[in-house]
Amino acid sequence: MHNYKELIVWKRAIKLCAQVYKLTANFPSEERFGLISQMRRASVSVPSNIAEGGGRRTDREFAHFLGIAHGSICELETQIYVCVELEITDFEKTDFITSEITEIQKMLYALILKIESKNH
Image 1: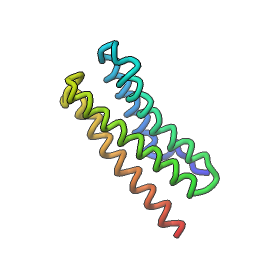
Image 2: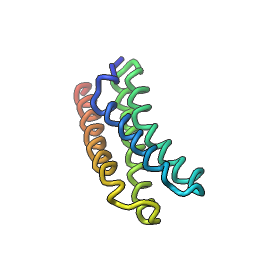
Image 3: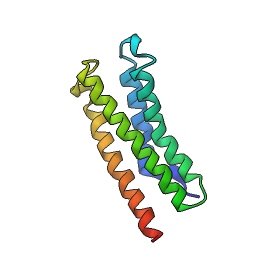
């Protein structure tokens, strides 16, 4: 079992999630069941999967859930680009989020590699 609440990547993912909720609050109401819902679920999935993995018994399980979190953050990144392409938002409003996504992606990948190398 891992203490996920001490992980910087989990803390940053929580803050990222809050930023996504704030950003999507200004989206058109017709996107409520589309991009707003998708982006919020993807952003919540990142810290949730870090936590779920941290609550598992083995490093292998933890690495698996970190991989799911990494997939979710890549999904969120894609959704941000779609929103910009559709002109629902612009790069200025998403700059902090996309920068944070990149950093969290790197952190998750490094943590996965660390866990996997420890067990080989």
